[in-house]
Picture 1: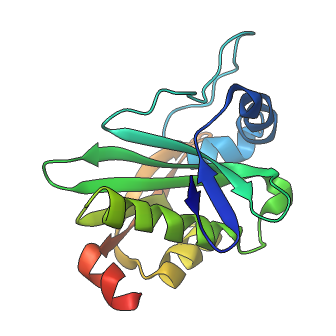
Picture 2 (picture 1 turned 90 degrees about the vertical axis):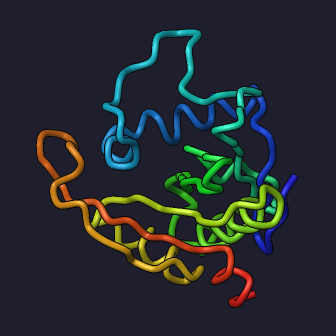
Picture 3 (picture 1 turned 60 degrees about the vertical axis):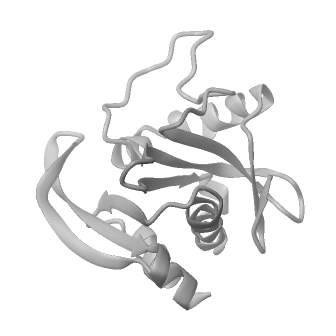
Length: 176
């Protein structure tokens, strides 16, 4: 279990899946903006939330609040490339818990895990250019806006710009 100031990142359990499905996957408007894959309805008995399926290229976590131990969302490192020592960060917070500063703590914990535990050199966040809350979180943690992918994402019938933010291990250590 990884501990931040306000959140815990732990392995995903079967009991987490119904909460993540109803609060995150079934929020079609938000899920469509947060995932590069098109939203699809789930058949009964299937899930888009891996349990016990982390691999060398992915690490999935359930986010839990420290004070109440309620599920607050999901977090992951994806596209982990151990040769180049890089990975991408992805987070999604439950709607009722957004805007409370938890996401900043989640990203800090993921950075600690990526840089300190896995020995990565670079972490990257890709998000829609209009996702001001995620961009603000990334910048608070020390990520640098590196560029814009013009009309790089097809989202609910239109092309939208994406931005890329990066953080190097040396920058992370210097800020801590």
